[in-house]
Image (cartoon, rainbow, N blue to C red):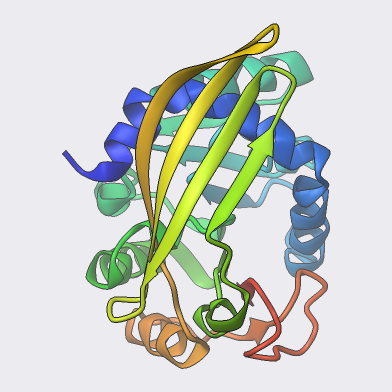
Length: 252
């Protein structure tokens, strides 16, 4: 079983509060502002694929803007939460469960005006897997369609790496113990997820997470070999990229 199946499929329900933390920190609003700008010119009713959609934090607002959105993810618990939130907001989502390694087969015959893969979706795969996924996405895009994504900048991590990180909600604590294998450009993290009960903390799961890090030249090769003509930015405001000081790398 791939590590991300254990992480997102078996333990996806434990991740739902993390999406609310991200929203409270303003990242969802930042992503949406970027998407509004990058998708400018698409007509109402344009088809968008949200790859790795999670609980629908981007898919639902995009559907509310009049786009026809397919919410694709490997995690049944996250997709069920996306359905619930879409119902609560009164918007229509097409929800598809599947591994992105097979997205071209799962969505065969469909064409999209844009694909979004935000919050380090593609880098949970290794390089060869990512290339396969990107080639499948290229086949799902209409001529002139856009791919919008972000990835952690390897060059930035050389000087800004953090060995420990925490995220906390009212009921949960997420602790990440990080290390980088610089030879394979892989960020490996051990996650410990705790549920708060009064003054006590109960360990709910210990999980492995991996993230492939990319320097911009390697990302350029990956995307062009997959049939894309990418532009790179150093922020979600689409500012010029400084390869040593900007993270993530934003791709259009």
